[in-house]
Amino acid sequence: MFSKISVVVASVLTLAAAIPNGTPPPPVTTPDSPQCCASVVPASSTAASLVAAAVGLDLTGLLVDVGLSCSPITIIGNNCGNTTVVCDAPKEEWGGLIAINCIPITL
Image (cartoon, rainbow, N blue to C red):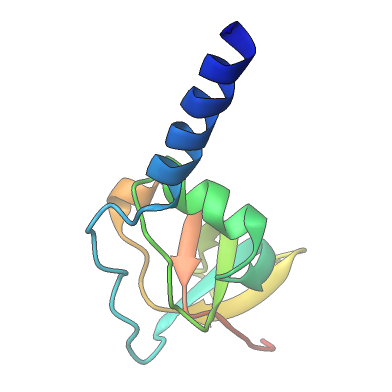
């Protein structure tokens, strides 16, 4: 009896998680913000989805790369040491965890 109930509850929770929350994905514009990111991954990756969910973003349908654990590059000659990219300016409330539409650059 309990196993049937747990299967039903698990199915409902899985379905609820799969339904989009109605929040449109962030707009993709011309990248203009130099960033130093720990990594750059496709928006469809598991890592990007987990970070996006943590900051309340829905990346469903975005076909761009995103930077994870990013900080702005503000000084010419800044030694990034990770992945240097130019992205859409990340929103302050994302806390540097994610930047959208990142394209690698060389300084």
